[in-house]
Image 1: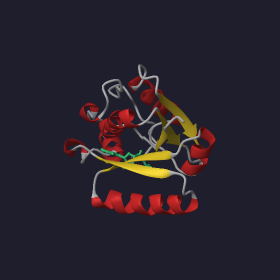
Image 2 (image 1 turned 135 degrees about the horizontal axis):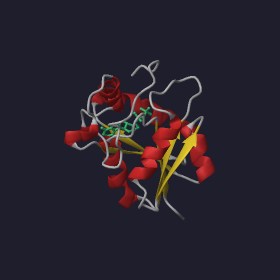
Image 3 (image 1 turned 90 degrees about the horizontal axis):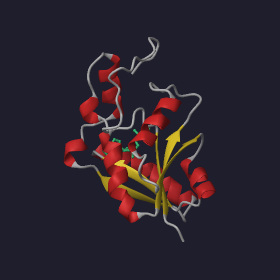
Image 4 (image 1 turned 60 degrees about the vertical axis):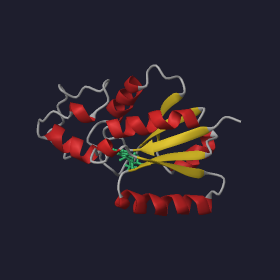
Length: 163
Ligand code: ADP
């Protein structure tokens, strides 16, 4: 049976931290589905279209990685996709507490699905999408925190967008 993992997130935007987690997890699975969460009630900074396009650019040569958009619970998507693993990254103890609760509730409700955690590389610990949004919003250069194929230099956020 194929080992499929779902890596869910808002990826607003996809960072070197996210990229590293996916690359390191790839040898453990047959396929990784990067699930870009879509929530009608939650405003993102970058458009859904751009977020998906950028992730596809990063993994354009990797056939075992797929990018999809899903509105709703990750576990529901896992069932649809035949995935038995949820992949998440951990940076800090606050990440851990947040992730622990979600993973334990998911496990209680869907015992067949395991959440797998990878610890971030030390140099990626301070990298967060929130900080990148702030840099971009104020016209700074965030390229050192973004995968090589993502170029935000000429990106102009809508004036009504808040990081
Ligand atoms: P969410 O909106 O669900 O928190 P994110 O897009 O912020 O999703 O992150 C998706 C996953 O990637 C989460 O498990 C998060 O902890 C992890 N992650 C985010 N930044 C990093 C990083 N710098 N290093 C490792 N993992 C990270």
